[in-house]
Amino acid sequence: MKRIKFVGIAIVAMLSLAVSMAASASAATVPNVLPAGTAAEPVTATASSGETEFGNGFIKVTSKKSTGTQSGNSTKLGAFTNKFKETKDTLGSACKGSKDTEAETVTVSGTFHIRDYKEGTSLRTATIFLLNEVKFSCGSIEVTTVGCVAGALTPENTKTKTLTVTLARNGSLNDNKIVTILNESNTENETCQLLAKMGSGALELSSQVQTSTVTEFKKNGAAVEVEVMPL
Picture 1 (cartoon, rainbow, N blue to C red):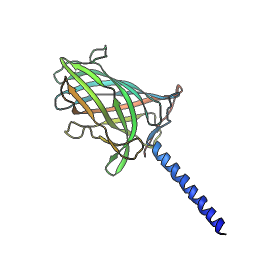
Picture 2 (cartoon, helix red, strand yellow):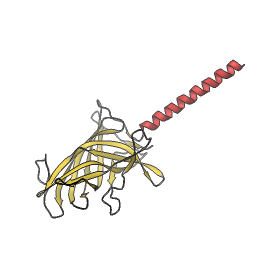
Picture 3 (cartoon, rainbow, N blue to C red):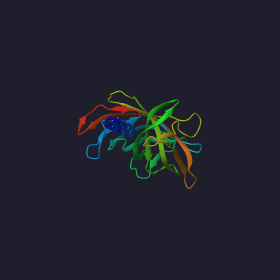
Picture 4 (cartoon, helix red, strand yellow):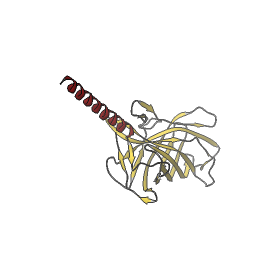
């Protein structure tokens, strides 16, 4: 009877461990956006926005509109490209990216990551845009931008054809509202901040204010609905 009892205890322990491991694995894969893309079968989409404001205490740049594309090639990440159009500084000087050929256009590219951030006592889902270095000129002023910027990703837990990414400023500060996020394994916090400098000056905290609409999701060439799965 003792042997049977010990075997029973061992089986229960193994089952508990398996459930615990499964739960940990599940927690590690969210937040994400379903269906998940892969390198062989990415989930593609288009993005657009109205007016975008970028800057810090030294420079302010406004874009009237933007268009872009993204390709989700993993559970939590992918690549993006955005073209900001009709871009000018506060003096009315046209801004142009160092690699752009179109007037008043600044192209930004990099990777996007799906992460969680804390809003009050609740966890919410964010898209993190990790930028490749961006260089652009407004008149005689050269600006360099690096770092990352995070925006709230909505709606959550709902199948939809359209997602919204909202980048907001932290009050009057030269910083974004979401700067502290969970790392990919959801075990500790990381900092996500946008930095910029003029000419050879020092990098300064900057902010980006933008509401972007992501739509036309496709996988294998077929339209799909998506769903944001929070932690």
